[in-house]
Amino acid sequence: MSMQDETSSPRIMSRLTTLFPSAMLEEHAEELGVVKRDSKFGK
Image (spheres, rainbow, N blue to C red):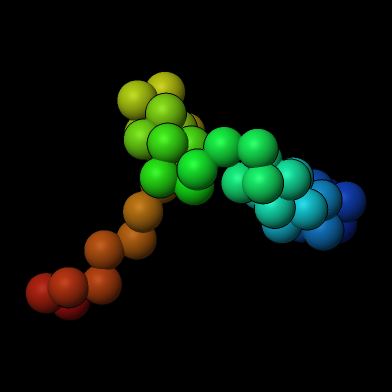
């Protein structure tokens, strides 16, 4: 990931969540398989 990707990612998410509910975006991302969650339970 480049420096620009790291800085633009929060801005993109912010703009998307002003247009769409964040829960809807998270569900859609999970359906597409682009969400990677780090589980910290049980470690």
